[in-house]
Image: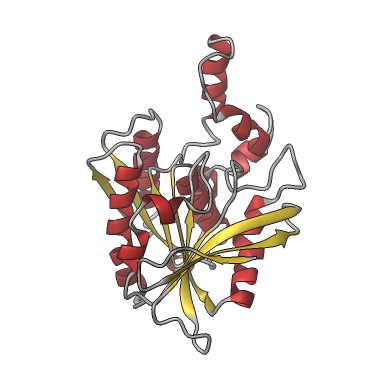
Length: 282
């Protein structure tokens, strides 16, 4: 099924769908095609990941994505990963969203569109910021750049803290994301809580030689200084410090903004020029 959104810009915005064997159901996604789109060519691909409670249409409908990409020769893919935290679920092994985003969907995009799978980047907000960084660390040679905007980078490492708050409040503290976190990463003794931590994944990089480290993605970490969620700013700073200590390539930005679409729109506006400058894409 292929649907075209109303064209207010020079690019083409499409909603497409296909059956996913990794999550065992139909999945929709949105694709932004450049003005120059020509099936005889191959274009770099940016995967933009949504946050908790979001979907594949978020970035296109809630930011000025089309304005920022106008005139750029790039495909932008907006997947729908539900509230999966972009991992292969511990509690529902039939839902392998990590495999979907990192492997199955790129293969589908390369089959249906003029995508250059050797030139990929990934970024996301909140849950999607965690997802982008986690996937880039697990599949480092797939992505040239990984961006996190208000990323929930301390999950699932600090999930036990949230469970403690929940118990203290007798389950009435309004932690809406907790069930999805437990579904994704399992109970308190689940090894998935460690293996899916971006800080654990970074430790693996400490054993790499300088040549291998240079091949890791370039990280762009951004957060709003008025973010309302208590773990976002400390987690982003800790990740920045870890990147610095390992001498990995990164840049870090704290700018005015809350955990809101107003901030993520500005973060995207700042990120895209950096993406083209870092990669040399047009």
